[in-house]
Image (cartoon, rainbow, N blue to C red):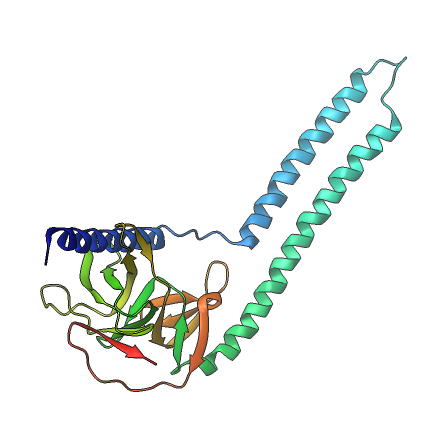
Length: 256
């Protein structure tokens, strides 16, 4: 292997590691705000502003020039604007309640997914019973690097090689680069490739996991895969669970 090849391999792995770390950091600092609290804050702010408005308006009326009083049209217009804003905030709060009721209904029906295998477009890789897998698309023979990070942003597993086919399945037995068995949980994964000019780029991939539950997240329903949670909007398919053979560290197989 020549120097340029070694350099490209190193660059490819470094790019994959950096993306996996960034994904882990992004997941750990996710927002927890919801529309209901936003509506409540909006109503509180509106109430304070409305009280201030009435105070200023009353003071202005007390000290206005009798020869040039405030126009009744202007007075009415401002009151109507505040009333309209209050109604809009109330509408948003009621809409949030309807969304919550709909999510509760989905939550109830989501029990049918438990035990099934879910496919998702996500950088979160669920390790369940010391098994995890992902499928990526590439050109046969294309250089590929996969990096896995734990929740703290520490790279625990890397692997590189050539794609076996246009669609490839990579399996992981949950061991780190030193062969130590890692605990089941949510890990961040990145799949990268490099071209002839040395430019790295992401490869599209999907992850798979067994559904163990469903719960309401901060903004939508989330599907649980062991200790990992994937937004329902990221799920692309549910299918009957299948059994697979054990992998050794990490391996890739081609799919026709």
